[in-house]
Image 1 (tube, rainbow, N blue to C red):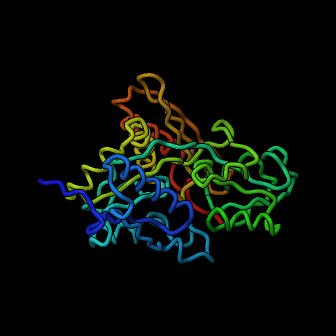
Image 2: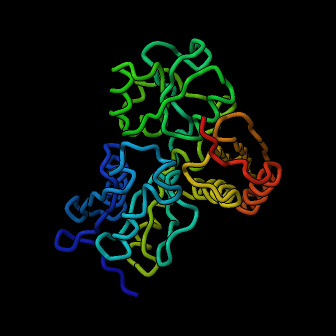
Image 3: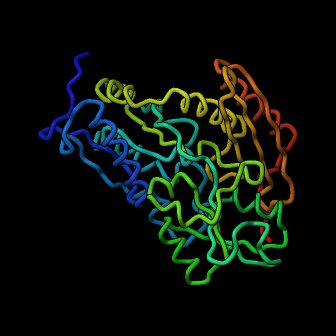
Length: 316
């Protein structure tokens, strides 16, 4: 099939959410495509699409739904031909794509760690007993309460700028963001510290930008192949297989991190009860070629250890 590169007269339409971070990720994708194919900026069009998670800000994510909160409307637009590719934070994506869509391109992974954000203290250990911490992430909430059950956790929805404003207003003493997002926004200075995975294991796929396309779009496939980072793709195959085995979403208390060790992949995983009362952890290593199979096997093992109802939400 003939490949026709985009042009100002027929630009490649890049779908994204409208937050400053989402736009930064879309611009990075556009700039990489411009460089790879020597194309002008106006050969691309950034198309902002609101998702349900952007529209409903007065409720916790767990109350809206589980999978696709940050992606469904964007994927619908691609299936309808209104956009050509979609740029996502991979940690927000369901492990299965809608029929007709493919996720097989990842940009080089940024810092995978969580950032500790506070105007008053430098780390989790320095928080006073009973201190109020804000987060919208069930994983972070469960991990924090598992380690510090004395703390009070409150809902903290919104983009990076909104959450920082809430801290300034005294809604909470501390919060968490992804170091990758802060780095991409040139805001790493707002982090008091980066939290090592031994203290708080990051979300599956944190720090990785995934680019989705239609399965039958030969031009998009050709162009995105030039951007794909093989090492990140191998880590994503492992971590997302782990998540799939747990039937998890971005709103399930699951942490997972795959790292390269020579010719092997080392995967660490953690699942938690939503109230933080129990944590089950595991790890494994396998040759890179077996990374996805190993990720699936570790997820199944942790799920069997947990038993039925482990992820059920029990209100206080």
